[in-house]
Image (cartoon, rainbow, N blue to C red):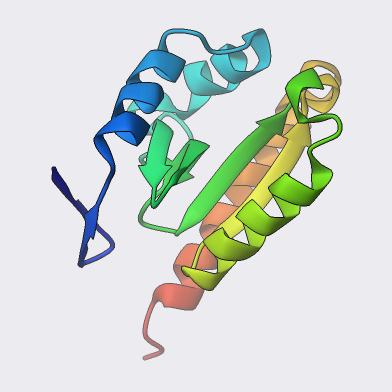
Length: 132
């Protein structure tokens, strides 16, 4: 299967696509909270995708326009700091910016997390616009 991403053709492994589809049905409560506000261009005018395959990885949320990945790190990420660092480094090498939130932060500071996501989208969109 071939998927168009950021103007390039990328092959997404069928197993990665299957896992992404499965993960869309098993989101954590914190991911569900964020998705409620990110879906359907509800946060500003920015379109987000959830459980979005990028190469061999699956981003919790991705705004292709801004090249922004939003990750929600829950208990499953404990002890995987090295893996997450390598994954983030690879995503950044592909031109993505990564925002990470812990599930606790999403629960305790939900509005602030949304403000940070919107602020980063606005910042990245402004950087991508040509100057007059």
